[in-house]
Image 1 (cartoon, rainbow, N blue to C red):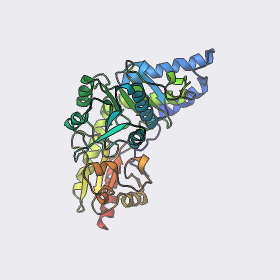
Image 2: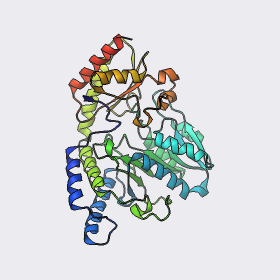
Image 3: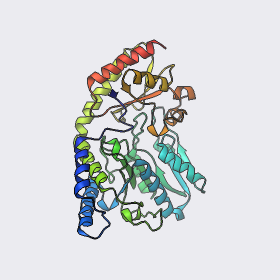
Image 4: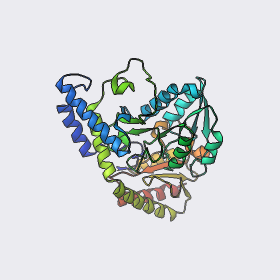
Length: 375
């Protein structure tokens, strides 16, 4: 099977798997325990915290380990809003956010918050002018994803962060797809809070992190919680975290090489598709783009049909964000960039990983030629 769904999840790398096994054996203690076995686990946990902070040019005391990107988004947004509720009741997000952000915003609307959903252009980018126009004296927080998980468009994060910092408005960004693929510097971009997920970078599932700038106040969501400085309840998953950080070290060390590789694979794919007789539209921004994600619209065919046909030929792709699969509803991103409901259902997503080869791309082009010739 050719696996081209790495934006949904990635296979765990050998280094991370070995560390998980080793830490499970040698550092099995609860890091909250006061005996030596617990202290050894605590020391390893703090080393992991510092290592992740270094990868985003942050501070170790701002790193909180979680179960993944969705929980990080949920806890970051809620804990920040609760701590700054005296400033107002307005938050701003984009119309193309991951479901974990979109759903918490919809929930907050039932609790007295006002939410502005910024539009985007046909490439999936929000415009700074729209954000500027949406700001009110009651705006507490803005949550804009670093990069879109369905079409790969990168948002103008540095410009947004600079604007919000000047106005003392909190800035959260979902970095789940971007981390390990492009450089992230929380200080340069004036990011107050961000989310990361292990299983997107060849680490284990069920692990992630939230970063909140140490000088920013946040509020505990579950009273009495002591783990992760009160950020989330539950015994800390030290083996999973050590494995996650190992994967982060590997992917960050290979970032430039991977970027060149994925750009080459992307160019090979788009060149091949351009020679097909059937219309296949490449979605997303032409330059501000994650190279490993390719969103495509196959004219006249639902994405689900194309995905199932590809599966029949031994190729695993998707029809968008894995958290939305099975809902049978059109992609929010595609609707936001101006597609009709029928057009929005034509989306397929191919996403590369470290196993992806040139021959895999050639096979995809061959299979898409077969599928589209029958339309």
